[in-house]
Image 1 (cartoon, rainbow, N blue to C red):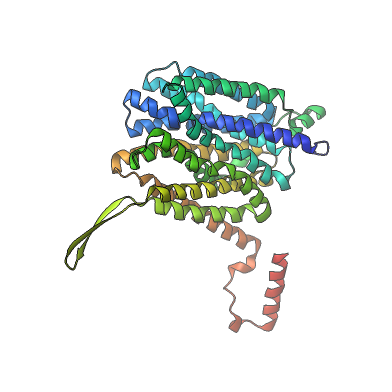
Image 2 (tube, rainbow, N blue to C red):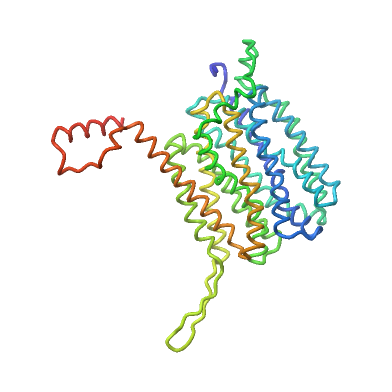
Length: 449
């Protein structure tokens, strides 16, 4: 694919339009984090049923990514993005016409199409930039995750302004995403890859051919990373308002505001993560992400506990609880490193799979999105069975530890394949001749260059 005729103005136009559209889609995708609480009260749902409700849109958004990504490769991101937003607008509006729990789940499946926009946007944006700049570009595009913060912060205010009528909020969201679809199609152009195929009369790659890279284990490893950095991000953006209301006794407006404090850095710093991945390497950024996140979730998983110690003069009782200000601060740190990790994962894809960005990006996004589906449900089940509010963070700690371990050993294995000398015994100066020392120094110098 040639980018010789692509101007910087065209790149900025494509990136800006895609980022704004993705922000709107993500705001719609997470709408149940707020209106779902109203629906929960109206229908008398338990935490497990509530978890299923808020997670259902994530299921559609995840499963649709693989198909939307491939279609974007085949027919161009501009057309698929606009059609996907129009379908989302229709489903969101129809949501206001149902009244039973099963029908709410069906309607939520339609609303979930909003989440499929990510795979389309990744394909569309990546075709406008050379490889050395895709990390930064996709990081800026991915900052559209801030739509979750827009919903967590703005939807409660809008809900109050509309007299508590969640149906009106959903209708407003539907009109906004519909208008965005029209404006996006009018003010963008076909991506360079599609335009080049049209000029040369080249047919698009068949659907099954696009899926061939999915045979590689590496794709599934990237998917596990994304299961946490994105799937858990979405899950917590949906779950935190409920968590704050239950664990700390806050009202909906305050809970939504504090949840937005998590979602905001979990979104806007994705652009920084893309730049850092270009500059320091995606692998390094992933190490920073997993190490910082496992520390945060481990601390956050500690439940409020009353202790009784046998003192010299009798029992000594005290309580250990994470104060609200500290918990919120930890969510901000967690969201910040998640945003870096999300950008780092997608930095890999255009580099390793330049001709299958849509399909590979769609699969990674699919698995990641499934985290946003299964985790809220699991959080609700753990609440109902275990009865501990912080059990959700216990689960996240385990997931991060698994991802970090797999990543580390996979990297060590690749290093040994590329540098066979690492398979032998470690360097022992007292057992090495001068000639062997010189050879090791030469190899070390070559590796640095």
